[in-house]
Image 1 (cartoon, rainbow, N blue to C red):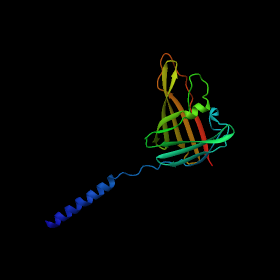
Image 2: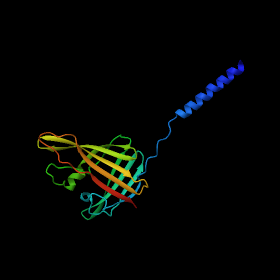
Image 3: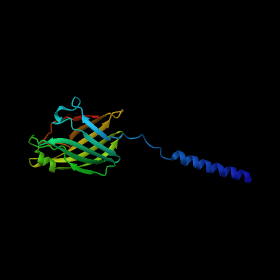
Image 4: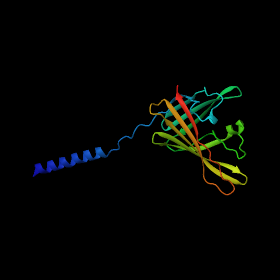
Length: 191
């Protein structure tokens, strides 16, 4: 009888150990690391978005959940860097605006764009990083709300980074029906 109790007790202990070990969460697939220095591939990038100096690199420092992006451009003959920081845990971030729509169809003076700030929320979607910002534009007496969705994706070999941006209008009314705004695609090669 004593022997049977010991065997039953050991069986219960072993079953409990194996059950809890198998119930532990297994780590999901690893997420890509976007860190590196990237050069714009002008042949694969939407023509409208090719800067004056496509030879200037974009530098990415990625230590999840922080994604830090430094983009270089030329302004008044000088190289300037703009840094944006994103957090993939959806805590939200505020960065200098990168896109700004005017109701007149004209471009925004660079000084005005530099003052604008964009609040966004960033998260993982599979192996892609997706950032969503909700923006507003005043059109006559109406406010039109739209979203800018940026999607970052690495190629399987980690040598090509593709960034697709799309503008999605939240709705329209009889006063304003937005035209279809094409997605923009920027392709970068690791240097």
